[in-house]
Amino acid sequence: MYWHPHHEHDPSSSTASVPRHRWDGPLSGEQLARLRAAGLPLAYDPAQNGWVVSQVPDADDDPDLPIWAGLSRLQLRPWRESDLDRFHALLDDPELWRYMTEDMPTPFTRSVAADLIAISSAGRHHEVQAIQTSQGPVGQVRMLWTGPGLQPDEAEISYWLGRSHRGRGWASEAVRQAASAALRSRAGLARVVAYVHPQNTASTRVLARAGFVPAAARASDGWLGFALNRPKN
Image 1 (spheres, rainbow, N blue to C red):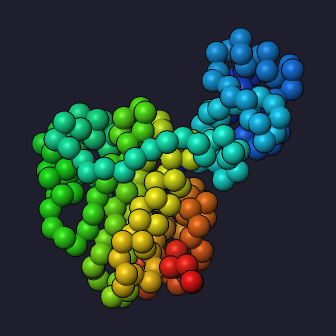
Image 2: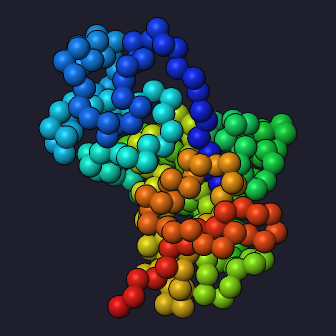
């Protein structure tokens, strides 16, 4: 599942007084001048009628993204052999595997990464898609159609995002797109479920922003459960 690291900020840095979340309000004139001088990326947020930091340094995947942040366009597509170098670089990060159900292969070679790309397109039990943005692939969403513990009218979603690409709303948008597409295309599907390690608070926020609500925990390991139900007509 998705994980986001937490870091302590150096109070002497130029970003020490930056709002913790982008929705904390527009920057003051002093903050704006200092951050522009420091070269940090800024964006005008019409919803707040002011300038905000477009990428809060070392922030969690912000649960309070302003309206403009949701405008980031992304597409979901299968992984390709040509993605190998990018795929390997994204996953060659032990911290990213911290809250995944599988252990990180050691050593994590390009050959292992190539095998994972091949596995992603094998079989009909799942659908694995890369999260494609203007910066290239940044992560992955997987829909599991059949598996242990899944009811016939359920599918399970899981996802990850490269560490350097977090804090822009891409994870929630990718999850929302994949889950909504599954419910539209599969008439017998009543809900999409997801399971998150109890300590993985960033992932729970991703799901909440994608419209998921708390559901029953997974009995096998106690991971927290979430569900997106088919809308009632």
